[in-house]
Length: 111
Length: 114
Image 1 (cartoon, rainbow over the protein chains, first blue to last red):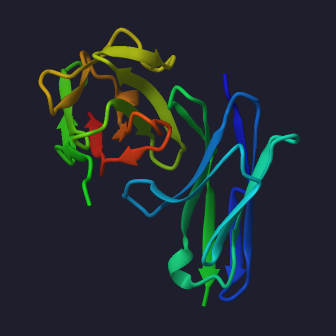
Image 2 (image 1 turned 180 degrees about the vertical axis):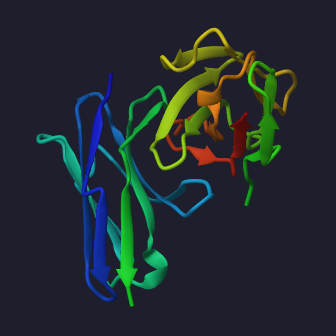
């Protein structure tokens, strides 16, 4: 089955700096790669996603890049703010809809 | 904006008891899922359900677990005889026909097995 690895497990940045989280996946059949932000006790909230026919996608301060050949994708957050502090999960999914999640990255943005 | 709703938000039960977690998916969605998240860990897939049958299940989803769509709106997860290690947050999710991999998560049910 699919295996998703996520790094780093924790990331601390100064407000205004950029944050980058990286994931690799194993199943070449995976074609959908969402990123979720999860605050304590809350549901995972989709913040951006990318499909395998696209290499990069941007939404304001958030961008995702995908390298299908290397089977890795990354989340980039620019101009970080304290409210960006949360746990971020990457995931990989195929046509059946089952998503395999990474282990999560705890992002702390220090004011 | 339509949402997936889950009840109850918290459930406390004794080991060995049966629990039923309830979900109301978004009304025009046709794919339904249960995921769980043990405190401090990642979100894990349990089961997917489409066209009134299980389409895929994980190793976690053993004979103690079952799912049902008893009517046109509810989707339930039953744990027949709960164990301590079943304590987790259980998330229901639903997806549309054409983009079923895009998940819409409910707010979760925190299950505590004592």
